[in-house]
Structures are given as C-alpha cells and as structure tokens.
Image (cartoon, rainbow, N blue to C red):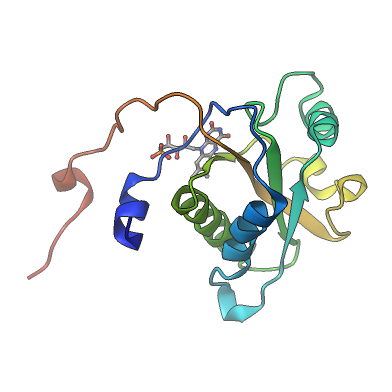
Length: 167
Ligand SMILES: Cc1cc2nc3c(=O)[nH]c(=O)nc-3n(C[C@H](O)[C@H](O)[C@H](O)COP(=O)(O)O)c2cc1C
C-alpha cells in the first residue's frame, strides 16, 4: 500500500480485538506523532502512552466518573498534551494525532481520536497523576489496537460541496 492509498483508506476504528500490539509497534506510531510538524518547530508536546488496561480504566474513572470504557476497550490509549501557553497547542497536537492515526493504519493497526478529555475541562490540565507533565493540558487522545470486524462505508460529502477551484 503506497502512502496515498494508506491516507485515503484510513478509517476510525471503534471495535478492537483482544490482541495487544507489541511495544515496538506502538513506539513506531508514537514516533510518527513526534515527527509531525509543529508551529515554529517548538515540539511543545508530550505523549503519554498507556499500555496497562488497569491504568486505562483508572483514567476513564477519573475523566468520565464512570466505569464505561474511555477508548472502546482498546488495549492502548495515548494522551497527547501540550504546554498550556503554547499558542499552537491545538494545531500541533492535531498534526501529531493525525500522523499517528495514519501511521497506525499503515502498520496494520486501527485507531480513533478520543475527545473524552475535553481541553476546556479543568481535568485536562490536572492529569499529572497519569504522567501528563505539570503545566501541560491534554488536547486529544488516541485509542489504538488491532481492528475487529468491518467498518461501514464512509459517508463523504460530495466534492462539489467541499472544494472550489479558481483557474
Ligand atoms: C477533533 C476530533 C474529535 C473526535 N472525537 C471522537 C470521539 O471522541 N469519539 C469517536 O468515536 N470518534 C471521534 N472522532 C472521529 C470522527 O468521528 C471520525 O473521524 C469521523 O466520523 C470520520 O470517520 P473516519 O475517521 O472513519 O473517516 C473525532 C475526530 C476528530 C477529528
């Protein structure tokens, strides 16, 4: 699969098999996040990679105040945070998350962006107990694992509604 085909065919995955990707494979995904563009190349981000199902459950309880899964029972949960005073925090972390989703797909894994830790919520800035650095806020998260089952056809808006050409 070439890079373009990989980008075009990526989908959000919300059902994961019990198989756990190796730490080496997970690190390849994280590496893709680290290599994303950032405003003025400041790289003011941090990737908290949670590989323990018990810890994922703890984070879920802290954020959701409930026992429901924060990440569709995926075996890996990655929180992407950035310095609170980074003016490009949202853009930088979005680039990192997109790179990771694309890399995951290219490596045969499935992923979906998880917005449960709302950046406007105080909890997004109070996650030091979960290895988010002090002074950092969580902007977005990723559920990661092996996809299970199929994904329904993509609902894509028509080209004419979303693209204009000036020639
Ligand atoms: C900023 C952002 C937040 C998202 N938050 C969630 C989320 O909390 N839960 C979820 O299941 N999907 C979430 N998604 C995934 C979108 O629902 C998904 O990308 C969209 O439906 C298109 O589907 P596709 O990724 O399969 O093409 C989010 C995507 C983005 C870009």
